[in-house]
Amino acid sequence: MEGKVAHDWRLRGQRYRLEGEECPHCKAKIFPPRDICPECKRPAKEPYRLSGRGEVYTFSTLNSAPEGFENYTPYTVALVKLEEGPMITAQLTDVAPEDVRIGMPVEMVTRKLRAQGDEGTIIYGYKFRPTGLGHAH
Amino acid sequence: MAERWTMHPQRPVGIIGYGSYVPMYRLPNTEISRIWGSGDEGGPIKEKAVAGLDEDTITISIEAARNALSRAGIDPEDIRAVWVGSESHPYAVKPSSTVVAEAIGTSPFHLAADLEFACKAGTEALQAAIGLVGAGMAEYAMAIGADTAQGRPGDALEYTAACGGTAFIVGPAEEALAILRGSLSFVSDTPDFWRRAYQHYPSHGGRFTGEPAYFHHIQSAADALMGEMGLEAKDFTYAIFHQPNVKFPQRVGKRLGFTKEQLEPGLISNIIGNTYAGAAITGFSATLDIAKPGDRILMVSFGSGAGSDASVWEVTEALEERRHKAPLVADYIARRVEIDYGLYVRYRSKILVK
Ligand SMILES: [Zn+2]
Image (cartoon, rainbow over all chains, first blue to last red):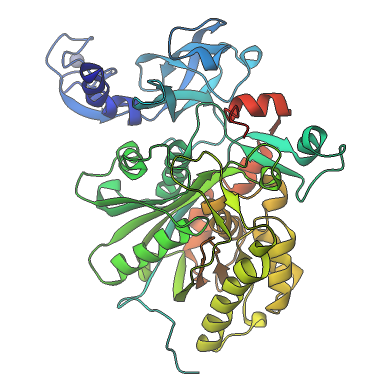
């Protein structure tokens, strides 16, 4: 439990505000942060906040869910291509599974991902919803 | 009249950015009366906004705060306070404000706290932000009021208890889209509505909630502020009052001399419900969405327990250029998905019928 809380805490920059990295050598935008540029393989540690704008690359609707997600079924998980380049896997929200399509413009929102029972922490993080009310910048 | 109760900051301040959020799900009153009433005769409002399964006061606050930041156009690291007023903070112990602050990207060097005063916690946060900036301790401070209000299933409150919120960034008057002209607060120990620790749903004093609570506090605050500032109802373009339903704000507005037209842009409880700490301020936000430079606006909140914060604002030229940098309240109201009582029970985890 304590290890899990610490793990979630370390991820809050990327989870809450899509904080990734920018490669100082080739300017590639990196998400999630991994300190090595996937394009040119050189060190990249400069924090970079992604805009949160992107589009649905592929998606899949889940009718059964892993522990902690049971309340949310059915829900859609998408591979989102961010406008800066990186691909990111995330749940879609505020959209019915039958209305999701490939190429749909989406924007990042911060929502509850799961709660660890009634006594544990509540985990917040990014999800994506259809674009249209965007404050994403 | 000499000013005795009216408060003014040491340096002029105003709102430099504002933003709201209203969840997309709507539960019509006819659907509640179908389950709990004698038929589908409806209730005090048309419908109320309901948060989705993955939403709570923190996520509502985050979206409102991002909208306020988009309009303000400032670096979030320059914000010196993030205060969130609510009666539905997700944790009993662990602040909502720190999550909101990290999500919008503040630096760690700022004040943060959660405030509670039933439905006036949002305007209390705003008064505190005015004080901090007005004293010169900070350039910018953020005040939020948001709630995911719950009524006991079948209780009268269930028709109106709704979800939503609004955030303001207070800054120097020179940068403001609406400048503060004066404010005051009026509070007393009045047991009209309460929720004891560990209880899931609130209790209320029935008819005690009207005259001695809502009307007495709002009228006392508004009369004192307008009287001391030498203003009458006709001197205002718009007025916003706490809106637990439609009738109360209409009646208190009429008693204070305001017309239906002055209340109209900020009276949104009929279509989103009572968003508690978010109610008066989201009405204010909807009014800023249509206001013009030079307009004078009165806002008076009410929180059970009980008290009212009243404030007078004057709109500047800056509003028109910043308004469209974030969604309007009307945009959120238009994003509407109707749900039935069954889905509502699931979304709001209503299993505790007592
Ligand atoms: Zn590189």
